[in-house]
Structure formats: structure tokens, C-alpha cells
Image 1 (cartoon, rainbow, N blue to C red):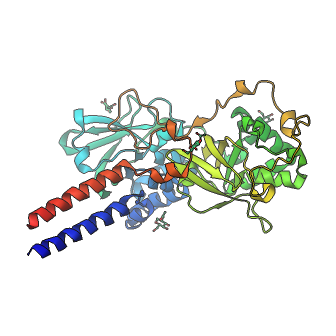
Image 2: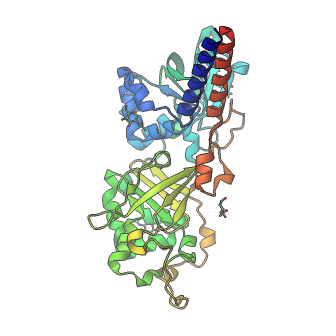
Length: 429
Ligand SMILES: *[C@@H]1O[C@H](CO)[C@@H](O)[C@H](O)[C@H]1NC(C)=O
Ligand SMILES: *[C@@H]1O[C@H](CO)[C@@H](O)[C@H](O)[C@H]1NC(C)=O
Ligand SMILES: *[C@@H]1O[C@H](CO)[C@@H](O)[C@H](O)[C@H]1NC(C)=O
Ligand SMILES: *[C@@H]1O[C@H](CO)[C@@H](O)[C@H](O)[C@H]1NC(C)=O
């Protein structure tokens, strides 16, 4: 008998370790979950197209309020994809709600933070959803903006992975007029250099104009474009090679290296594991980049150096513009060794950068840009705060930081599994 018990304990320990390690990464895949339900196929397609799926997969806890194909048609027919994306982002709650929790909301009403709040374009309570326990067992959903009506109700539970992801069906879209009526200029009308100048990237903007690469960017927009714009400070860094020594063709490659031919918002960058091609990638050179993430901090590694993404200037499908804190130096132009600054430092010869600098760059500091994913607290406090809030101390990207980040939900799950299994073993005795 005793040996049987030992055998059982070993088995449960094995199970514990198995589940603990399987649970460590954010293991949910919203695309896969929704694939099993044809009635949500439209919703699923839109999450893929807008890349919201990546954002959902990189967060926990998260609750997705899905709409059936019929309920969704009231928004998709009337609005461009960039607006639909914002509207759907309002249907992703950064908290875990299952049927039980919905009916146990303290005081009967709460505000939950949504993914839309993390865009930085959500003044007031626009990025919050009001969840109210109504009489008769119904639960209502509405915009968090005071005075909004509860225009949607809870229909049914679709699927849950406890405390990581919950998928619930609601009856109708949550109506946030400010999102649906926001002006959505077509991406090809966006004044790229104008936005870059406002975001503190004057030097980069003028290089794009003088080199003609701006035209390359513009003609790529319709199929998707992501720009990594170094700020004006980045051009003054000591590591920056003398750009006057580059040929015109090399300057073009360098600038093309600062963009991707795809719409790649921050959530997608965070879930990117393989290296990514840039506009400079061609037969002769790879000109690729790799991405490292630590908490909310995302960095681009060129093989020569690493630069951190500091803000989102624009995220509007199919165009994304980020600022980065360093010039991206491809190995194809600058070799493996950190910025070979051969012998004499050319202090006297001003780089093209210096020519175009405005008198007071500090005044122009990124007013148009928003800090990355920093959900501001609402006036009334939401139930539970987002697990991936701003992490001011995660700026230093080291592999240590990245690897050591065993998330609390995973830890809790592990402890839970341990206690349940131990309890089960005790019962067996
Ligand atoms: C999620 O699931 C979809 C469909 O099954 C699959 O195509 C996709 O590669 C998965 N994503 C990840 C990150 O595993
Ligand atoms: C949610 O909306 C209802 C109805 O408009 C309102 O009475 C309630 O105060 C709101 N709850 C919160 C937390 O704002
Ligand atoms: C874009 O903005 C810049 C700076 O504000 C301005 O000089 C330029 O004329 C604008 N271009 C277009 C096409 O509107
Ligand atoms: C980042 O962390 C590493 C390792 O802890 C340390 O050596 C390095 O000086 C830090 N860099 C900055 C900029 O704080």
C-alpha cells in the first residue's frame, strides 16, 4: 500500500511540474479559441486583420466580449477598419470576468479598463466599460462615459481559461459615440513629416524628404507600413556614425531600414519572436531586426545596437508610427562591431542632421505622441487593475529582465495546482 501511495505522490508531483511549466507563458490563443465557433467568425477575422489578436494573446487576465456575426454587422458596414479596431478594442477588458463574477459585482456596478484605454487616445472615461448587474439576473454593458446608456447585455459564456482569458458573448456592440464618430482620415492622406516634426523627429523627417525615401514610404502605406522614427536626440548620440560618409544609396538603405512593409502595432511587436524584414531588405542584404520585450518596454536589436521604442505617434490601420530612442544601425552598413568611429572624430563637419535642426527642439517635444500603454486611472476606480500597467522600472532591457519575468498569475496557478494535488494525495491515504 505504502509504495502505491508513493507512486501516486510522484505522479501528482509530475503533474504539478507539467502544468506549472505549461502555464508559464501567456498560453492563450484567441484565434484558436474562436475558430471553434462559426457564429463569431467575423469577429475572429477582424481580430486577426486589426492585429488585436496579438494584443489579446499577450495579456492576462483578459476578457473578450464577442459579438455574433449578426450583431457585429451594425458597426462593420459603416466604418473604416481603423475605427472598427478602436471599437473592438473597447470590447477587450483587462480583467477576468466569468458569469459568476459578473453577478457578484460589489455595489452592482463597476468600470473595467479596456484595451482601448491603452492607446493613449482615450480622454476621460472613453476607454472604460460600465458593467452593471441589472434586476432579474441580467448584466448590462455600456460605455464608461458618465450618462451613457447600457446598450448591451450579457448573452452567454463562450469559453474560459480560469483567471487568464474569458470569452463572453454580449448582445450588441458597446456604443461609445466618441470612438465611432472620431475623424478617420485615410492613411494615404496622413502627413508623415508633419506628424514626425510634432513628435520631436525633425531630423529624421528632413532626411526622409531630402533623400526621397518619403515617397517610398508613402507608396507602401496602403499595404501596411510601420515607421520607427529616431528622435532628434538620437541623432546627437556619440555612437552615431558620420552620415556624411555614407553614399546616397547607403542613406536610402539606412532610412528604409527604419520601416516595415506591414502594419505592426505594439502588441504585435511584443509577440514577434523571429527576426523581421524591413523596407531595406532585398536580395543583397537581410537588413532585418529582432525585437526584445521586457514588461511594457519593447526594443529593436539591429545586431549592432539596441534602441527602445519610446512612444506611439500614430496607430491607425494600415499605418503605425513609433519614435525610437536610437538610430537603427544595420550590420550591412555598420558591421558587427559597435559603431566603428575610425580615428579622428569629425567634430567640425556637421552631419546632415545638424543642418536641419530647429532652434528649440525641446519646445516641440512629442506633444502629439502618447506614452506606450499607460492606462490612466478613471475617476471612479475600476475593479482590479490591468496586470500589465506602466512599469517605469522596466526600461533597462537585459536578458535577465526578460527571462526572470515569471508572472504572478502563473505563479498563483502553480501554487494552486500544488495545493490541490497535495490535498488529493492526502485523500488517497
Ligand atoms: C493561434 O491559432 C491560429 C489558428 O489555430 C494559428 O494560425 C496561429 O499560428 C496561432 N498563434 C500562435 C501565436 O500560436
Ligand atoms: C453605469 O451606468 C449606470 C446606468 O447609466 C449608472 O447608473 C451607473 O452609475 C454606472 N456605473 C458606474 C460605475 O459608473
Ligand atoms: C506636412 O506638414 C509639414 C509641416 O507641418 C508642412 O510643411 C507640409 O506642407 C505638409 N505637407 C502637406 C502635403 O500637407
Ligand atoms: C542595465 O542592467 C545591466 C545588468 O543589470 C547593467 O549592467 C547596466 O549598467 C544597466 N544599464 C542601465 C542603462 O541602467
